[in-house]
Length: 377
Ligand SMILES: Cc1ncc(COP(=O)(O)O)c(C=O)c1O
Image 1 (cartoon, rainbow, N blue to C red):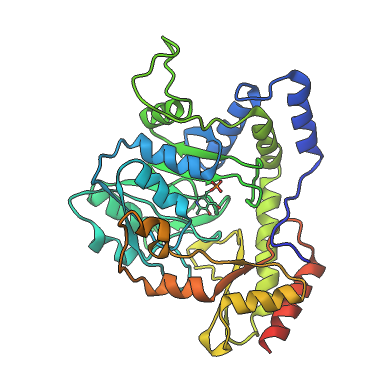
Image 2: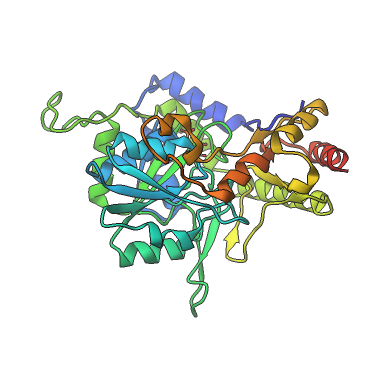
């Protein structure tokens, strides 16, 4: 079976984790944590990094840092992971859903404005499967309407976006560099992994302080075990941060490898009929976190039938997200009942991703592509 993802760990990871074990700094104290926070924030062009225990925790801390009130609204794509909606509902606020753009699969920025109400407080764009959302449009709306931006960059380490592309000074910016608060996941299938882990980035010192406090049970520095507010224990360990620091040392290589996997798949699959491949808009550098494909209805198959056929040929795949508006757990809370978002519904029905891990070899890519060709022939 060719796995959908396998992490690629090297001797540096072993060296730094061993250093933690030898020194005894195995929980949330230790120099790798600060080093990871500083280096990742710096890579993304941010002033502050706050490590947390997962990408989900990052979203939860980011939303909580904004101090939303019940009834406040946060606009997000329906085509994303449940963590986005969960972070908002846990804060007492309400997620408001927007459909996706059919080529990039990211939030359709043209639909955001008509969903803004007097209660809207924030927009949460998500960079899907390694392709950036169209951030200038999001940032402009946020500026005009005085909304916060929580950027979910959990799938887009190292992806880039050409900002101000219609001006005399277009410039590339790294994903994670856009939100008032930006969130990453370092789960084992991500470009950089700490096993489990996440980070919140911001340039705002007050938000950074708030996020740090929320991550660590809102302990106070002057009087321990005295709490003005309720927080979470979302601390990352030094052991995990050591993995992150080791991987960051080869970040450029990792991004290049992912882009190479994307290019190889594009080359081998471009002639397959009835299969939509991932795009790379002229204003984007896709890191192909996961190489997603969407079957056309003319293929006579949906994604689950396609996945079964590929599995018989030894290829593991994963289905695309099921839209938030189709989630029973959210319906039970009275959310999104009767909503329809046709692009996301089609992506959920017809989309899946192929093996995309860093350990994937050229030979394996060819095997996957041969199987795809055979099944769709
Ligand atoms: C877009 C997005 N946001 C958030 C998360 C949550 O990250 P984690 O699994 O680390 O909690 C994920 C996970 O893959 C994700 O894809």
